[in-house]
Length: 322
Image 1 (cartoon, rainbow, N blue to C red):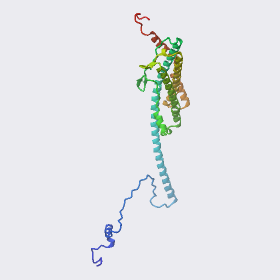
Image 2 (image 1 turned 135 degrees about the horizontal axis):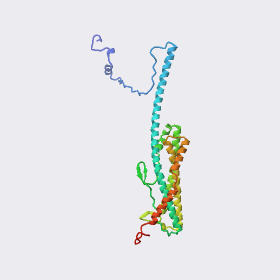
Image 3 (image 1 turned 90 degrees about the horizontal axis):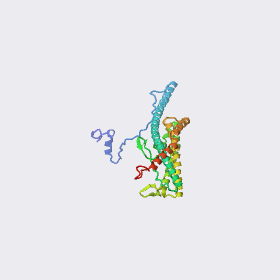
């Protein structure tokens, strides 16, 4: 029986894909897998509708393509420039805030260094008296006292300390310093990489010198008061050795203060936005005058301390007279 005689039999052309697959189970089935294409950001340049009939049409078409590419590149460069400009302003603001903190710390350190030098000069005088009297002066140990001073909005009586460099260190590590103009980058590099680094070395020397002095003093102190040596326990040779340590500490402290003055002057110039050498020199000269060593004032204060110490409390039975 033919297909025409049996209408239930479909013609081969009318068999759909599923009918053919079920009709021949031995044939492998083809499964359509959707293709996933990774999207890429590209610039599509489409040809104009219609053909290019004249040279004029060709040059207009070429100019349109070139202008479009130039606009796209200009927009990309503009966005990148604005991004770098924003990063630069953020970096400048952070560095400026750090410089203001260091200005505050430097001013507090000036006062602390002065107190430290006055104390060391007082010890030097006491050792001289002990040597002159061959230990009979029996002077008490002169204690170190720091005057209260304002640091970052807080009253402190602690010893001088280091300056902060965290913003600079981070910017230097991730190459953001290249965002700054050349003169500004040079000024910050001179301040941090040279002057503050040198001050930190001097400050470390000061700490080491005073540590050696304190270790020597502890040998002649009681267990209950390990930081208060009894001067009369030192022999003449030991007093001379002690005096050397005291004056080494003094020289280290004075050197650290001198290094801090250099930092203070350049730091002020950067805060004011003055990056040229002449402006830095003027701010340094102003810092030299503001943070000068006033040894005459220190001597007067030591005299006043000695007078109060020598006067002491009145003896019993003398009606207040010595």
